[in-house]
Length: 455
Image 1 (tube, one colour):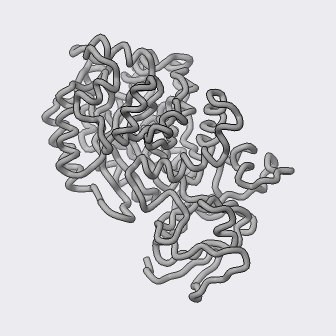
Image 2 (cartoon, rainbow, N blue to C red):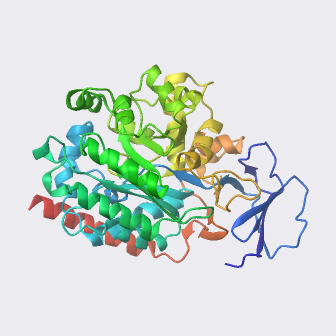
Image 3 (cartoon, helix red, strand yellow):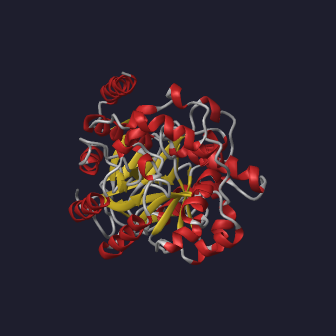
């Protein structure tokens, strides 16, 4: 990348910035960073090498997805798992996922990231916790696969150590010993984790859930995260079944358990975070814990509605996530922002949750959840991660407020996406990717996966 190359994205139809109209004249990018926001009628103070006319585009910071399971793009709408809630849904799919191969994971990772990128998502966190025999190098596979798509990634080295024989939920073939888990966690941190601004790959540690790991593994993971200065991630308070599991196995509620194992701290972000009472929300906020709100998945599995406004009001970092593509069954972040706005309005009312709130959760809020201060907003010095949407499809005909129209009228695909100053999507196509070939490969492998399970 030429560190001094300047690009002017000029005169967007609308722009999502902290101050309205702050970038009505456009955004100037130098190298991989935003150099300046221009007011209406203003031009760059230094000559640019390239300019792009954005008069037909709505400009957003790149969207940030805080929780996913990339491998699940192979198991969308599986008949055996339809119309079930979380525990029954998991027990239907665990045996299928146990048949996963390295080749399948590579393709599924690229499919998930491509789908996210085309929806305007420039940074994505994935929670991979399946390491059956032959899948020991899953994180290495994901690092390699993600490089070809171009999103920034936070790859969480997940883990499951309690199988059904030990009182957990997953089958024994999908769990690992805790010694093996911790050794590989340290290995992938040392090999792949990038710290500081502009990081392309980051690693976090992510024991899967209270019903699949031991207390000791939670404590050891927290200690390892502290040693290497990385984040911690897990599923928590997704369903009432999980709450009951914690009460029966550990003798306490979910937030008490979190504190007991050393996770009630700023390194931690939680997937879902639905079933917290007022006192627990206050404790989470005081500890600066993050929560990944997953509206699509929560509705599909009928898990409940995240208490977003109370969480934010208490000081919890709140972001959005598509969750796995077997519980959504999609990986589309701009659609997820729309779902978040609508679902939260059911709880709080139409006036209390706006399109601005949903866009903020999907950008700056999600960036904060992932511990990043270099992405998520359009401002000088920030990484040049941008998503541009056109409002030229039939559903937008007759719309007026461009930012509101993105969500209210149902935007679903970005026209252009930039990551670190490089165009990754132009004219609705991912640069350098044969998407038809990737889809065909995924279909073949998804068929093989189910055939293997059913055999």
